[in-house]
Length: 291
Ligand code: FE
Ligand code: FE
Ligand code: ZN
Image (cartoon, rainbow, N blue to C red; front, side):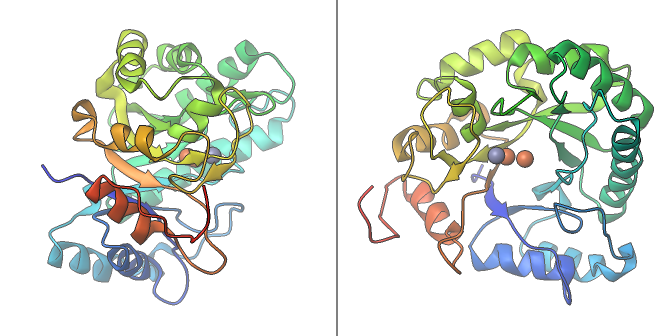
């Protein structure tokens, strides 16, 4: 099977999802991740403006489908907020609508940052997240929520595999829960991603490999365990090309969609270069600087 790899792409006027697919194709990618609107806010245009039919045609002309597309929920959703009922309720209501939009679009997976307990304990955060997910997920949901592994910045929940496991255990219809690994977040959380088979063994024992829905492939601007969450271009950070290349080509992750969320270089997206380097399994400098 050919590796499924792409990046996050835009979704904005005038072409919306049709523009997203065009952007993906411009990087020679065969997968992508989109937000249903701006990631930082809850403003969303009518779903019928998103050019879903046109995007579907262009995907299928290229041998692709919505199974190759991951949706990401906006950052403002925080189901872990222990202190503010209004922020918590907004998260539940908005995520419910985001799942509806994901269904209409035709994608099967929406990535969610589990949440931040905002200075409360991680147990309190987890309890809040579990109760939120239990209000959202139904027996016949039809869309998977992929909980993203987090760097552990502030009081972010999801920095350990045990925390993710605790959320899964608390959710009644947890057949609809998956996991999104993020290499930058794992590294910043203190995992050694250089021996990814050892990591996958641990993941399998605690959560189960079948739960992995996608991997965010990012280098990191910081050292292992820094709890910072600042993404770097592939081959220019503290993880480095070799380790990340071994992850994307790990045979145990063959079925898993890989998504780049690395920073732009000024006005230019790095994704075509990064994807090409991974396909060639060789690091070619695309910035013209020492790394
Ligand atoms: Fe994310
Ligand atoms: Fe990520
Ligand atoms: Zn991140």
